[in-house]
Length: 92
Image 1: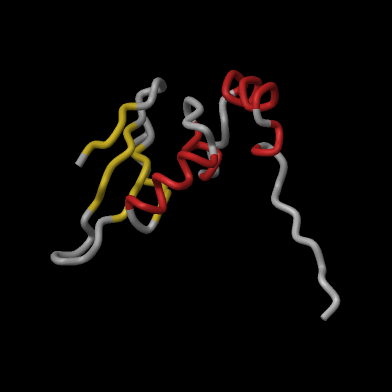
Image 2 (image 1 turned 135 degrees about the vertical axis):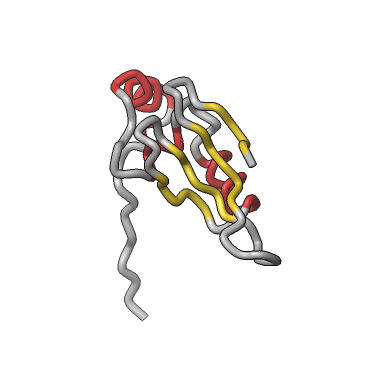
């Protein structure tokens, strides 16, 4: 099922891989290649909130990467989304 048309001719889809199994979220790009986005709709929705619903945010999760315009928008409004996550070591 189609969830969203992205501005660059790609589609975010809700895909049932097996009967009676929870659907997963995939991005179908314009070259007709599938990219896994999330294990379920709840996870997808939470990721959308983290990315503030920026245009083309799904591409940050694929090998294609963000377009220059999307990078510029994110760098101005939410630069933390462009840097890789860092983890603090705790001494226990």
